[in-house]
Image 1 (tube, rainbow, N blue to C red):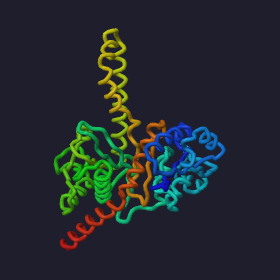
Image 2: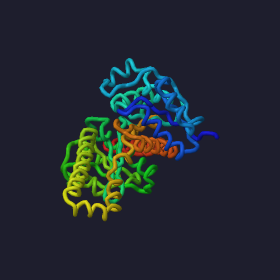
Image 3: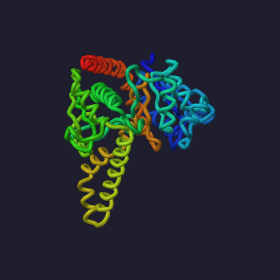
Length: 348
């Protein structure tokens, strides 16, 4: 069967190693019958794992890479000396056109550095960002940046808005997603120069983007807007806080249900509702970090990902490639840049 696209996978990244990746591939080949897979890593270790899985024969090709990027490696070190690592090979396959997308559960900083070095950034985008899909009371919200950039200028926040809006349209299927900038208040006079400047640019734009204005931290879970824009420092803190709170609630719930016989009986009666809640809070359904703004599609899976999570990351990468997301981002950002330049010229 002709393959519609090929996924390039860093088989040696993450805490669990290749066994999780192979288990995830068993799920992926069933979901995507027209997709091929390149598995980058130690051939001596990978070949026996694949040999035990007949369903992967003819669908997965091993590309030998003698080394791996460790979680503690500095991005600068990987850039200088990491050309024979599985992560470098996985990204390089996208650069060479051998694959359409890349997926890794490895070192986030190194993956971003290698992706920027090998793939470059979309024209008109100043900095790439890491996006994540956040469960809310209304469904799902895209939040970015959640870790690629410690700070962000007004122009960079506008870039994030453009990328997040294009992602929400292409992947979440929203025709006119609403955009909000995360701030310490919803009032126009609040916030630093970056968020106020970005809001001014978006309000003045004639693009069809639905700019809501400023949103606060609790608006993320409420689903007040479809896309929440912030810098990587704030976004990462918010993400880790939300993940910790979800684990806390789950732990409290388990303790309460186990505390008495009545509680255990109640858990049996409410098993259906509790399972639904568990699925909503399950971080494995989240693809992890989605790199936006690169001349190529890269998805970063959680370092501690299991087969379910890694397969979800591959699903997301394939959906992004099929949606031709980068073309949408390029067109949208070019239109806003032209409008901003015209407005500035008119003020002279």
